[in-house]
Image: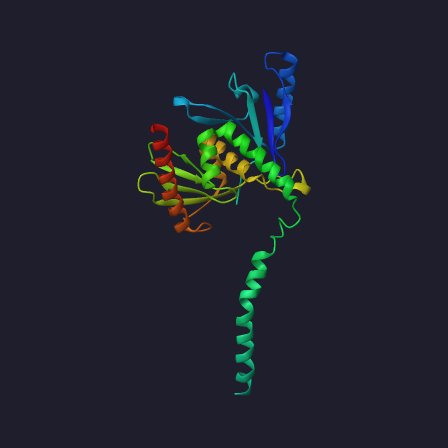
Length: 81
Length: 178
């Protein structure tokens, strides 16, 4: 699984990568996940929904990341413009 | 009378200068982008487009690449959709009649790298809106400033975009079934 973060001037930047099945790697993913949320980032998991349509799920805890998800995308929180 | 002789030529001179001043203003880079690294920004946009393709799918990617915005469905029961523009408000519209319903002004400012500015690449901005609308529509709409249509975007332009979208979708369908 990859954790990537959208970033001005760069596009998405890889911030962590690991196998959730490997305890040590999962721990590192969780740590980085929490760090991004502590920074105020929003986290989304894109995936295939019913009928093959693309969907996205917003997650606030690592345990909410669906099994089999290959990527979590972090982006800055929305603000009224 | 004497003042009139002075004022009239002054106004005429000003009128002659206005188009030149306007052209100068248009050609001058916006203060926010004046010192930007265009090569870096172009590379960032390429990356962002690739992420958009992988995350939102080939249809959304094709729509964005060809039309400059993407359309996504809101509530099926309530029958509305959204047009998502990069760094512009999200526009809600009635999916059946095409009537424009509202503008949602929302941004994703990021101050983590002052050199890069605070704006995500265009395609990242579109993808962030798309993911937030799909994943937690209420949260995003709750953060946005809601206005009547026409506040920031010309309603005529948006209606034309809806027509272009309809034609584009018909063309895609014809291509897929042809």
